Image 1: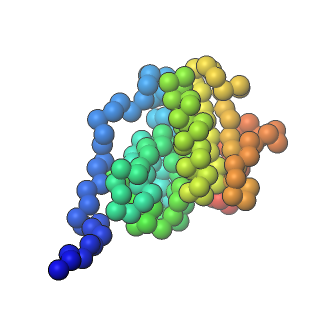
Image 2 (image 1 turned 60 degrees about the horizontal axis):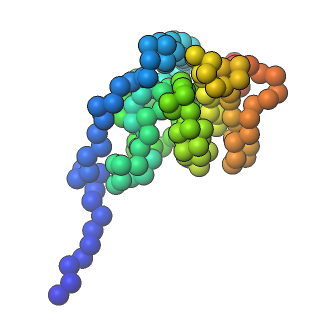
Image 3 (image 1 turned 135 degrees about the vertical axis):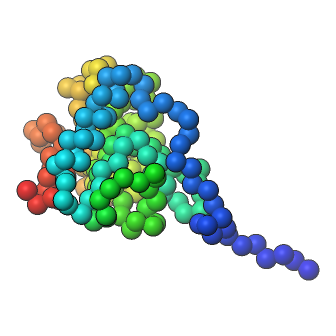
Length: 170
């Protein structure tokens, strides 16, 4: 007799909200994260959108180890408000724009793994902000998904206005 293998349901899978790691590498990075979160939260107040910071983004149902914690992410067409974590399959929306407050210690992971993952997930814009000016020329570098690959934003725009502002209809 053989036993049937079954996939665990989401009720049987634990999706943690914390990993015990610090929110940011330095005070400057934490401050940049918090300011970005608050400015975007206020800007999108009253919209069908949420802004989350340093919360797990789960991207594969039933596989809680497949997660990432973007510094700040904006998700449109979802109920506003905070969440302990964000599961793409439950909410039905991928973040539209993600910001990473990058540093020498995170630059490789931000520029390779996270950039590739966000590109594959369909995140429309990905922004690297280097608050200490250690490795990103001009401290800010954006990437836009066109149509399914990231290309550096080099058209003279120096702020991440194209995605957030355009999707809001301003």
